[in-house]
Length: 67
Image (cartoon, rainbow, N blue to C red; front, side, top):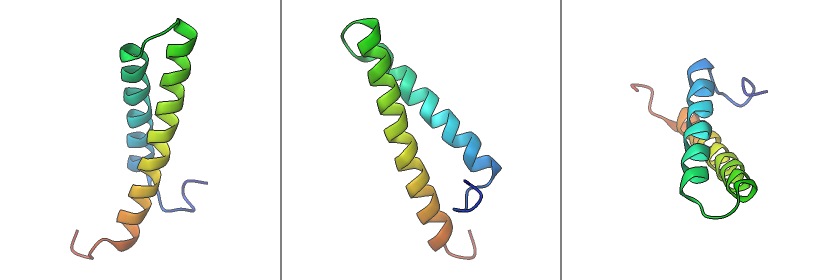
């Protein structure tokens, strides 16, 4: 499915890295029980993943040809 919207293999790898790093950082710095920390990490990771996909697709679609 990610191929259809214009993400190549490198973009998919970067997507997983972004989701993992943001989720881990948010789980560590948030306050609450371990379940709350895990939920915060998952939600923040998914939101950052969506933002990454949207921005990558827009950049790939409208970037100049010399990039």
